[in-house]
Length: 297
Image 1: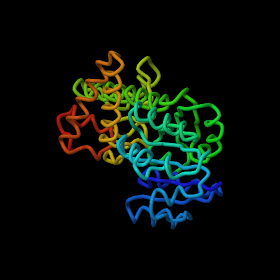
Image 2: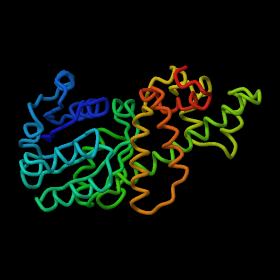
Image 3: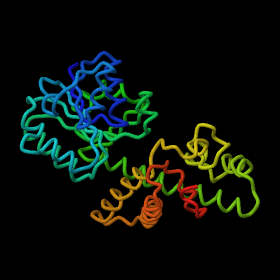
Image 4: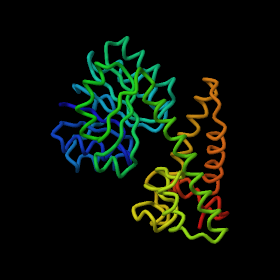
């Protein structure tokens, strides 16, 4: 299939490379010239602009930083919806606000094109390994068109429902993750104060009612889970800044919908403090350092 790929950052670059490995013809564009060069080295064709990447493509994948970028790329004066051919399948894997996803969907539908919001979970490792989880919002016919493409970049592909529901699933999931990570970190900090060592708490809680993914797969202290970032001085798999972005999206959605999310609000406040302390580039599990009073340790 001829696929345009727009947005070749830490996530988008490996995702595009996996589409190339699967045998697709990929035209790749990013504002960063080195990012395009890396994509070309991986077998993609470099494109001079987003519209050039989309030219003659059957499907287009976008992975962009925020909602305003998605609006500009799709809805701008020279946006993709004005230049791509009717029938084009658009897959936006950016993590953005639900309203933007639904607005772009409506504009794409009016232009006789298919649009899916398909944010991902799994971090840079999942992008490189092709094991991402996709949470997809949009019409079922479009989802069925997209599924063979998504399966080359991810392991778990979920249709979350109508337009915007992919974004809704992503921000709800990540709000839950942030809250559970903070709770896990608080438990370890309290254990340290009480003289209970990390390994003992891990062995007990991992088989008791405190068991959760933040503990057993991404433990925020070194030792119990060798693959967790805690063993690499919190070198990021998913940065605190990215978690804060998702928490802010969740809070905006909660306010607009009238949902009560007091723990989500507290999580956003703590990650704001962590980022303000200069730790935005650290892994989000490094929030334990803030709780210890040493965010830069």
